[in-house]
Structures are given as C-alpha cells and as structure tokens.
Amino acid sequence: MKNPIRTLLLVTSLLSPLSAFAEPAKFVLTSTDIAAGKHMKKAQEFNGFGCTGDDLSPQLSWSGAPAGTVAYAITAYDPDAPTGSGWWHWQLVNIPADVTSLATGAGKSDQSAAPKGSQHIENDYGVTGFGGACPPQGHGDHRYQFTVYALSKKLELPANTSGALTGYMINANSLGSASIEALYKRD
View 1: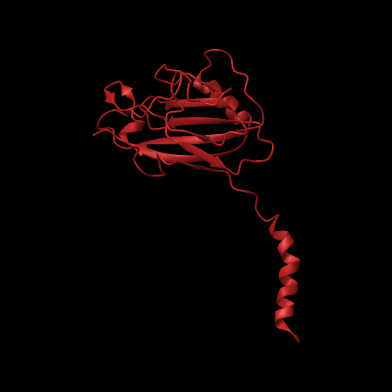
View 2: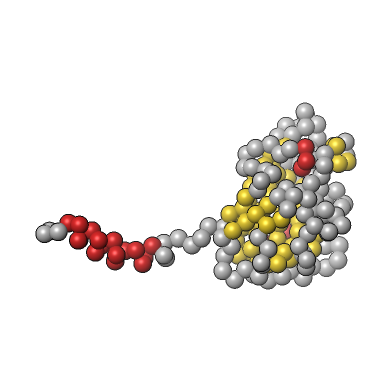
C-alpha cells in the first residue's frame, strides 16, 4: 500500500452509491401534544362518562411514507379497556396523500377541522370523530395507541361501518404504519 489515503478514498467512493440502497426512509409519527410512554394531558380526556376533559384529538405529524401511498388513516385504540375487545377512540380514513399533519382538535365530530375528503368513523362512545381517554377510575394506566397507516388506496366503507370492519380494511390496504403509544389513568 503505497498511499493509504488514496486507497481509503477509492474504497469510500465505490461504496457510497450502495448506501442509497441500504435502508429506505423510515415512516415516523410525531406529536407536539403526546409522547411515547408519557401520560396525556386533560386536553385529550373525554368529556362524558364521568370524565371532564377537553376531548381534543392530539396534534399529529408523519413523514417517510412508503412509495405508492394514496391515502392515510389514523386510529386511536385502547387495548386495556375492560371490554374484552379494547376501545376504538378514533378512526379517520381517506386522508389525502398530500396531508402529513393534523392540528390539535382535527377529530372534532362535525368534521370541520379534518382534511377535506377524509371520513370519521363512529367510535366506541357512539360518536363520529375523536373520543378522548376515559379509563375507569382506579383502573391504572391504559395505553393509547395512535397509529398512522399509509394506504394503497382510498377505502370504500359502507355507512355506519363498525370499528372492526374499518380496522380490517385499513390493515388489508396498509403499506406501512407508525405509532405513538401514550398513557392515561384516572385515580
């Protein structure tokens, strides 16, 4: 090896084109209102069923969606609800592909703050739109899984579709997903 620096530069230049193929962009979900493993604020608590929160869906932003994404769906789910099947707090489908964030309160039931063309699904409170956290008092921490899904097509759902059918259609047409799991409890 007469010139180790020249050899290093040659090897580096040969390998650098391969780094473009090493790993695709990562699909990520972020929020200014909630954080993974942290307790949500009263703003994300339901207003009803004995709860007195502001019932505001959190701000959400996402990036790195897979190629071929045609639309997005957002869900909020509590697997710890004492129902035997969890609790759907929010399902918003057919968010246009050029939308990559939702403002705080985008889950309002009147759909006034949701992206044009999107569709709220009735949650397990029986309300169309976001329904905040309201675990039973003294039940301890509940996990709230906020997930964005990149969809390969817009979903065609019948009127009054169930949360389970919506979840099935989301998963059947998902190209990828990203989540934040926040916590909430009522003492």
